Length: 393
Image (cartoon, rainbow, N blue to C red; front, top):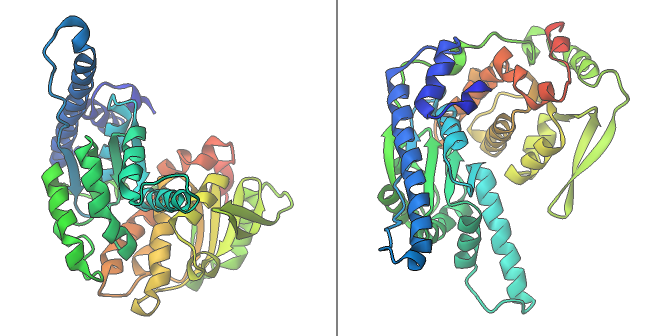
């Protein structure tokens, strides 16, 4: 997209407003300017680091390379947090940078910790504590880190975060994160939450907290919907999904497949032409997680999910997996076809726990994933898997 060629977040944002994608919002303009300040601070730090590294050659006084404070942007769903963070990520001049969904990042960190423990067991290292070397690896690979949808729901993540980021921040990590909740509400009602509280203070010490109180849901402004979401109660279920599957796979033969994840196989009931088809139970009632969904998204540009039920507190684990699934597919621009028992806003009826407010984001993203704009920029569209076929459904 042309906005990536512009030289500031503010100008990139203004270009998209001018193109008619959405209306200008004062809160978004203010955040764009703050992100531009951080872009400049990161650039200055890079120059200072180079000057410091070469200073001994020219007798110059070394320049401080204290890292700038990152940003933690929270606010209601659909207010443009991820959009503006992505603009920042494209423009920030750090060569070692990483943009990741929070669940993907934590899965990666746990994998590295497991690998270190295996090395310790095999006598390949003497360092008993895996956290410092893993933190070193992560910062060496990316010292500017962008997190989409910071939301802590897993106790293993909660217990690791404080120690991991204490090491990473001390080594100069600059964090930019988006979230639906303010830092004080992270891991709300979580098991042993008192052990998580030091991380909240650590986070606030190293980032500026900004509430993006934008006026409108920008996703809904541009949602000219295409028929990829089908209500079972309206007779749009299996037959329409079957027809969509035939068109998405260009009528080619399909067959069961597997995706290899960490030494095990995740079953794909139907696959072909870059598309995969599952039932809700296949993906959300099974013991799958962020790394499994990421692997599926890496293998297929189009995913079908049949028969998504209305969920509540009784099946909150399945709801949590569905939230992670949608986040992962959205983050990777996967084209998603769904048949469901209700509209996105009516799929979760629970009133307590983190799922109740996290599902607001899921519903907003499911709505956006039906839009012409999303589908035209999806990986399926880039792969030439015809958007025109969708419009005929």
